[in-house]
Length: 406
Image (cartoon, rainbow, N blue to C red; front, side, top):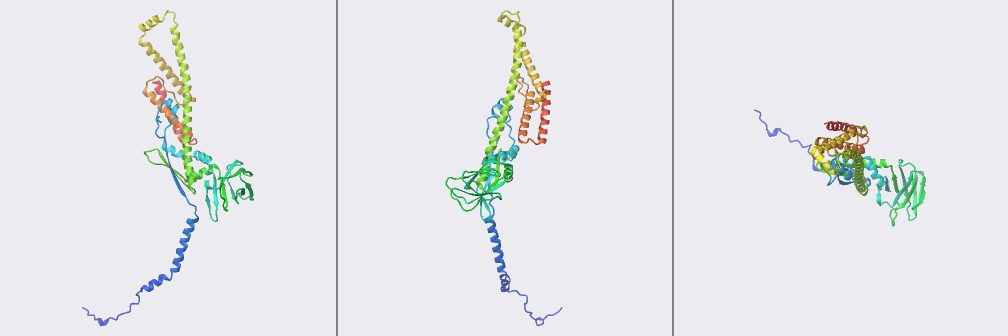
């Protein structure tokens, strides 16, 4: 065992000890760099928030279908002709709201392809309906070409304008300007207004281009799987413009639904009129054949004729007449179905034929025709959907022929 003595150790100075002063000095020497970095970051954030375009989000909801007294699945042609009912598919309605055709209608009606800006030093701010000027184009040479007009020096008499990069010219309020792009008129938006010294910019884009821009910021989705309510949201640099787009989109969507129901009603009523003419002719033929029986000279009076039929035929005559009418109607429907010209037309109701199987088969066939008409209206260029529906129609058509044969 080794023995150690305290005298054998020599106390060494703590050379590596770090004092609080040295730590503070190490960071304080870089304090100007920290302050400069903080100032640069804060300034960059302020400039970005101050001069970047603000983006607003507007939202709306649309109820599709609603509470109707007439069922959309009602196969009664009279109800379809009177009310123009149609089946509601929420996925189809969502695509219809984002369709190019509907958005172009919204752009045309709201003139959303014309945008008004107030040009400041660094950025331009969209004014929309708050702009003191309102441009009206009376006739354009080419509506697909985009252009812009810069308006300056506004006063109570007029101001100056510059089309694209052309020379600056003066104008007066309500004057018709004949330019290379067409005829334009620059008017006051408000009867009493003040004018600032900042220039104003009017941008024009084609209707399809403006519709595509709106569609890029538009989001349409179903609110819930258990409802027919659709939620719409859109982003825009001006909240009033975004709100007007959504309001007009909902209005045009309802108007388009009314137009579609009107077309269904007109086509259904025309189909009913055509079927009634055919059935009326057949009934007249039947009545004429029955009238020849009453002209038989062997009966001298009505009472003798009645006694003859009551004794000889009784109820059998009524059954035979019903069978005759049913046979005529079945042949009429069969000839109509076999005619290739009526391949995509609805089949009229089997009048008087109490056959549940035949009625159900015809109802499915008519529903498939309605589905094809709607698909042709909403997606006329989608050959896959149309081909699938037409194959289903051909199968139902063969089922109808089989039912008629039975």
